Image 1 (cartoon, rainbow, N blue to C red):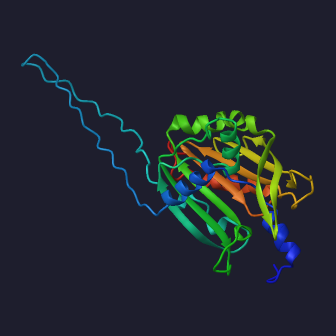
Image 2 (image 1 turned 90 degrees about the vertical axis):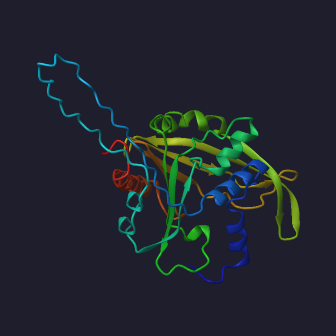
Length: 284
C-alpha cells in the first residue's frame, strides 16, 4: 500500500462506504463500544445434592443405593482458545482489539439494523449471555489502524440454546425487508454539500457449510448519487460478506478484510467451528 494516496484515491476511499446513520444506529454503536470493555467473568452454578431416604422394615437391610450418572459439566466462560488463532491464517498476524462483554446483541450488520428500523421493525438481533471479540491484523501493521488493515474480525457469543438455533433459523426473515433499501442523507465532499442516496441489498447466499449451522450474508450497494441532480458523488462500495456459524449454544460472526474472498471466508468459518468446540454446550 502506498503511503501517499492521491486526492482521487482518498476521495474514493472515503466514499466507498457512503451511508447515513440514523440516530438509533449511532446509539447502537455507542452502546456496543461502551459495553465492550474487558470483563473477566466466571459463572459458578451451585448444584444442590438431594438424598433419598428408604423406608423399610427395621429387620431388613436398606436396598443398595445405585450411583447416579453425572451430567457433563456446563461450560460458561468463553476462553480465548475458542477463537481463531494466528496460526489459522496463511500469513503472520497479530491479535488486536481483543475484548469481552456481557449481554450484548449479536450484531450482524449495523446498516442492516438501520434498514429494519427505518421500516418500523426491531433490529432482529438476539441478545447474548457472554461474548468475546477480536481483530487480527498483519504483522508490523501501523499503530493507527484503518478498516482496510483488518484481516479478520470475529465476534463469538454464547446464547441460550434456543436463541442460538433461532438466530440462524430466522435469518431469512430478518433480511427479507431489506432485499432492496435506499438510504438518504446529507453529504459533504470537499466544499460541495447536498442530499445523497444509495441503494443497498442484502441476501443469504449459502447455508450449512460449517458447524451445526452456518450462513453467508452478502451486502451490496450502488454508487451514491446526489438526490437532486442524479450525479454520482462516489464509487460503489465493494460487496461485503459475513459468515454466521453456530456450534451448540455458540454463535460466531466472521468477516474478512477487503482482499478476502467468499471461498476463503467459508474455509475460515470451518476452522472457527472446530475451535468453538472447546467452549460449546453440548460439547462436540
